[in-house]
Image (tube, rainbow, N blue to C red; front, side, top):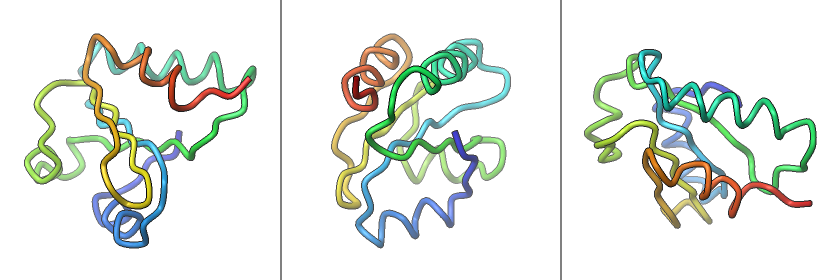
Length: 102
């Protein structure tokens, strides 16, 4: 996953790009599980959409601006619009559905 800033995220949204963002924090254990999942599967599978991450500590306004309530939160953007959102429990399932192509 590539670390991005709030400004980069807003640019991708304005450019109507399709991608996935992992909103995380360093203290979050479940966030670390998502990171481990990505590391495990990125060598085995081709990712169908670019995958980015943004640390909520880098800019506290991100949490409010993107309505992040739980961690981790994964958001799928298609053509610059939020397509699907997943938090905590269903994150790995959402990643399996929207990222991995066999």
